[in-house]
Length: 531
Image (tube, rainbow, N blue to C red; front, top):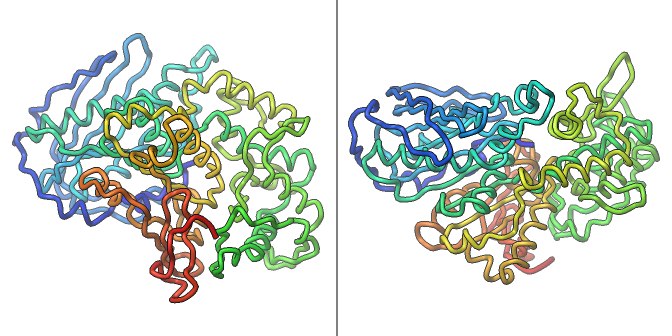
């Protein structure tokens, strides 16, 4: 859930930022910045220094290339909430030269509320004043163990609240105020940019703090948290109850059979399941087929097909009622249906987000073995997750009337082959907003959703689908020029099986091949109501 975040695919590097007129600094010294007032919090310290011509080095998977020749005023603000035991760091980078007049807050990944220099560097390189926060957490995107529970074994609600929503508002207040104090003028426009956890944080801003940002870019948002995180554990439950743990290679063999069967339902052969609604592939048709696993021919069995079928169907109660969505067809299964060898025997290997959510927040027991959970127990965990934590972290309130009133703009995109945060949940959210606020046409005035076929979580390097090339540029044009995006341009990554470009159409429209022209070029596609 965000651990695979690739910052260079978030639309951070875009040309429209370069064209913006540079603003001159109003304050010459980085040391003259005074603390900001944050309601309900006390500023513990504020430290600042100029840094010249430094490099932030690539760190896969978060930053894929070095960012060099950076010169900033770095401001570190530490605060604590009133009546809370926390120590929150907010880091603001202010370009010494060629500020583009904009402020951008950048989100986090996994269990991290922010990624610090890895997310700040590419933003500042484009002229933004930028800010990130650790929300008072450990900064570890994989494991919340250092902060989830207090010494008495109880859930640390102060820090969970910071992670869930509060830190987003703090970042906006401190980041924008610091920017204004340094440059002597407020940023003309302010933005949020994030994917996965960062996408969820963007939706939090839209729902709870609609006046904080002019534009919000939210990729693969981790909303519906209390449902989808428990649902992520379903593949482990399926394998546990089947007493069978297929290798990732076997599972992928069935997935690829489905892709081959459904690939051309949209009229184009490109190794992408684009027409998901019409893809009715029966995994049992793959039984008896052979796949190459570790140099050996392996035959797909009934057991493997049954496991895939249940994973696609999604989590259910013991009476057969659906709890949440299953993996979309075409999505890789090796994240959630992962397994490993222990003493020569293949056993389940739960995904880190669902595993730690269950252990720390639902069981309050770091030693709990989540791999032993069965379907009846998962149903209980699902109910408990919603009952206890929906208000704190679900981040799926459909009332965006505040955002509409503020004239803010929300651009959400989600890969339709996301194997971690299923796109069906984001579609459900958009539909709920439409029901709450008067229908699709009215909602389109301030919130647009784009679904990218064949693209996995936040657009990883190996995804076969076309990744949105510049969603942030589209958002900036919407906010600053009033040009609402009807489509996003998209292109496959250099590591994709094949190269092509596509139009990613505004939901609910789809990109359909017009029947002539180069099928690898987006110029040969139109946005239409259906296939």
